[in-house]
Image 1 (cartoon, one colour):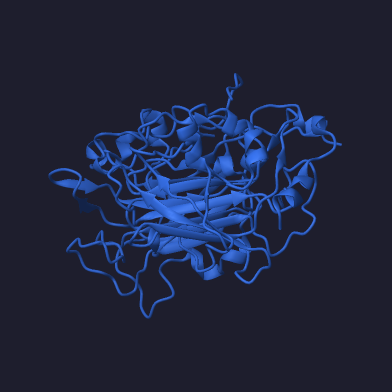
Image 2 (cartoon, chains in turn brown, green):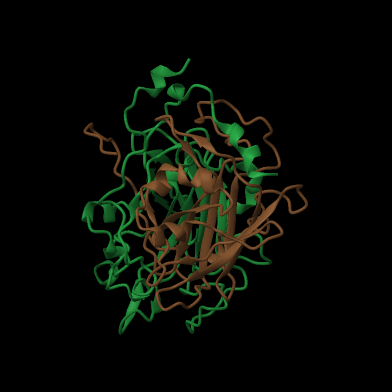
Length: 195
Length: 251
């Protein structure tokens, strides 16, 4: 969104996380948006792959999402505080392993109202950081069993190519597990967003 | 839980949902496809980015604070049996929005090489000594005025394989959340007058020289402590809110 007014401060530019992010960024509880014994918890897991289809072993995947009621424990949500804040952090962080795997344990997010009156289907916003990425890349994870909500989602609707759109829908691996590979480049390249 | 259970999230009156919006960072951040930076060649997306309007998920974000840090985490020179080798420094500054407002109570995470230019990481095979008294990770939370301060060791420059005789200018990696998903930033702080600036494809990936210069800390004699440590000042500016009616619209 452009803004014609004077900005008093220039924004600090991004730089790559480089190959050694594992010194500073992984947390032991990072993958746990909720504790793993939480009723109704799901696992979202997948691989980060490069343009040659090779795993990216030095990436960091972060997720941010609404709670199951579609609420955020955040003062800028004009609907007011979440009904049940506490053990749900909303935020997940997983460094990839040597095979490029990441994993977060969370609850399914609720649908969200849009300012223009539409409804966003349940989704997670995702940031991916890695050596070779001078800025994070942003994508979204949607759910495969939300066909009706996905069909009405304005972000999915903005992607006309069904093959590209499909890169944003997780695979149902049954038992509360969802697979979501992130292909940074090339065949099956994941849709990335400018936010 | 079934999919239908989740539909309860809609609010009854959509028209009341007025959200803050964050300034675009267009032209500030480096383009992803920087051919001079070899690692980008197989990792930078080839397709254009799709626009993502800033809605509820984007204008909120994790508010991570004191529960994730201890007081010792802001001093990278303690926590080992002895003191690390190198030039002890204080790095201090403020986290601000681009509209000039401080960002209080926000988590900052840093990591860096030791004084010899070696990272305490198995993948780093630079034949410079590891320092048993330096790990190179730190974190802190900004105070109510958006201020932060670290005590650490000035990191060394180090070689990398991007091109023949490639060396990275000394830098400290900084990770910031701000208060919204849109504000998330990971970057690097550099030191003044580094002779490697002109040769570094990562630093020079930022197209605007003025924006590039905002990554360079300034030496600060006021921050410098006699007989103890040199002071460097570095402010970090996150995307601020654009002017909207939302603030007068709240009731």
